[in-house]
Length: 427
Image (cartoon, rainbow, N blue to C red; front, side, top):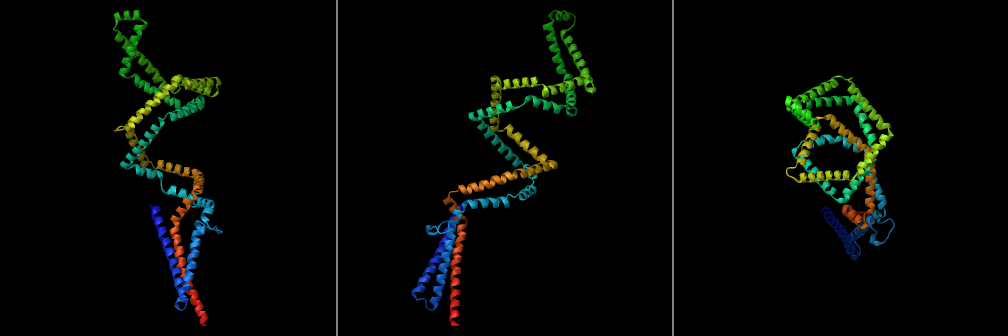
């Protein structure tokens, strides 16, 4: 629509400039037929100067885009001839004035991304929009992942990445992280407390009693039959279970309350020895590597992973298209939670804005270079006819006013010069 408007405007201004030139020519012919005497002398001088101005400015305007009348006059068709220099200078101008580092960083600092996101997510309709868009994005990505060539490529790439993973070194780093500042002892204490709570449950003790009763029946049938004549087997099993639980709880309580308990020290020594072996024992590292390679190469493992991934993919595809969708509900709640978190945590907003600013500073040189090259390449690859058409539609209509003004100014200069000659002749 904009292009059509520009084309109409260009044609209209061209017609006005041509009409004025033809008017000047008609006045010139009229004055010439009257021999240029009296008032016609003024008209002759004005029309001559108007034609000269109009033709000179027409030549100047046309010379920007093409050779006038198809004749290769020197220094004409400037824009096509200088396209490469134009592309380079335009790209440099945009880089230096629009992508300048200080200007971009001021823009990033002026508009806080975290605050804007928090404000945007505060509205329920925006949360719903976010959930819907992410849902569609995930759905299309899962559909794309169903393509067999892509699945094979992903599987091959994933296998290559897993083979490059140094499992022994990674496990050693994990153990080292767990043992820093006594974290492993805190984890052990938490595990003991949870195990103690689990053992005190009546349902757990009943299950232990049933297991003990079945064990005695299988392992010691004669003894169990003899004991059954003296005491109820179920009562005996429950008593044994309670005694086992009580003994286990006493041991766990001792370990939990005593930071220097031998069991804790044995646990600490085991972790440290395992850490050293993972870091230094080459035979253990080689064994882990063989186990890793064997697992990755085993058909059953590959088939199992493929089935799990396929089942998960199918479930997600069905859920994303269902109404209501659990995934969409989780996305909506997640967007609300994140928006509330940004809204109530100024330190988080500052951290995000700082990260955005630092990322902009780090990535800006690459963006500048890429954007500059993109502008240059786009202009250089532009078909010449299209480039001329677009430039003429963009600025050609305004350039026609140069022709119009040249005609008018030439007419006035012609009158002025003729007036000077008349004045000089009368002296």
